[in-house]
Image (cartoon, rainbow, N blue to C red; front, side):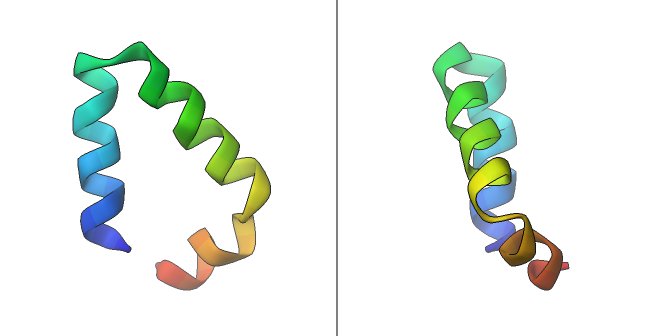
Length: 37
């Protein structure tokens, strides 16, 4: 999960669409993000 998060952050810098994907993931699964921490 952490690796995916890092990859997503890197992708945001290269692809604006990645920002939308990450935003949707955060909205759809906040509990999963919290557990990953």
